[in-house]
Amino acid sequence: MTAEFFEFEADFVDSLRCIPMQVRYKLDTCGIKLKLSDWHQMNTLERANLVKLPCAKETEIQFYQDYLQKLILERTGTPVSKLPIEPHPPWIDTATVPPSIQEKAQAIGVTITLQQWEILTPLQRFALIKLSRSGHENNNFPKAMAEFQLM
Image (cartoon, rainbow, N blue to C red; front, side, top):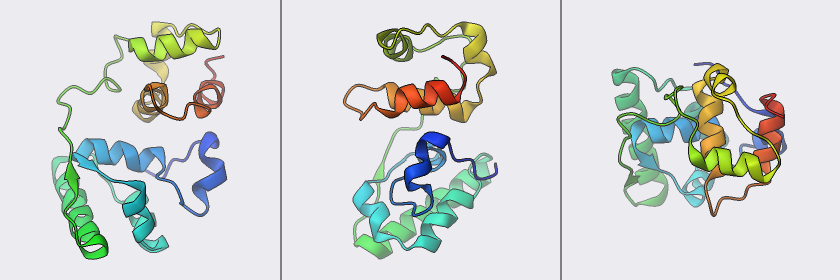
């Protein structure tokens, strides 16, 4: 997977001051919860490595997890928090548009069809799921919807 940044992330991608969606996708894939404060403990090269490193195949996932655990322990002196790894993540499921996304979309006057959902990439679906969660700063949800040509 090549480095893929979204336009709605443009204000922080150059500095990597926030955790980009593709890294958040990899974190969910390898079952690690990374706090923004931990991210800020890393230097630019380490953050860039987390963007570039593959995390799709079993061996890549294990390497990514090990690399990140070691890095966080070195930087913070604290082990990483683990997350349960979803065996069937909703961003891989092209047959169902998650209710949280439909609700968020309807709140801005849009309905997402199953056909639209199917043609999104797993990373795009992941981003919409993350941006539609309650308690999340959601000003990027409409931007992502527009970027993914759903409006």
